Length: 131
Image (tube, helix red, strand yellow):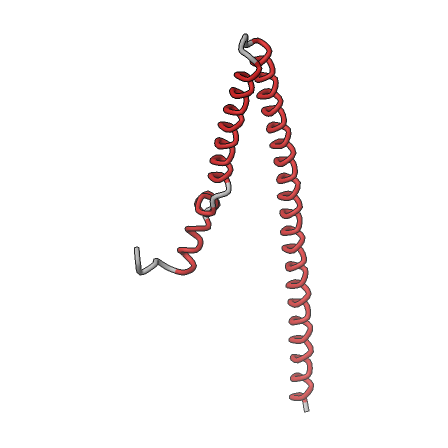
C-alpha cells in the first residue's frame, strides 16, 4: 500500500531535481554564450580600432613620403626628364618593397605560426609520420 506512494513520491522528487538541473544547465549555457558573444564584440571592436589606426599610420607615412619627394624634386637642380626618371625609379622601389612586405604579412605559414594553430593542429592530429 505504501510502496506505490513512496515510489510516486521518489519519482516526483527525481523529476523535480532533474528539472532544476536542466534549468541550471540552460542558465550556465546562456551565461557562457553571452560571455563568448561579448568576447566576440570586444575582438571586433579592437580589430576595428586597429584597422583605423593602421589606416591613419599608412596615410601619414604616405603623406610624409610624398612631401619628402616633392621637396626633393623642387630642390634638385636637375632637368625635368632626370627628375621624372628619379621619380619613376623611386616609385618602382616602393612598389617592390610594398609587394614584398604584403607577401610576408599575408603568408599562410606565418599566420599559422604566429597564431599557434600549428601546435593546436599537431596536438589534435598527433605527430606526423614524416617528421
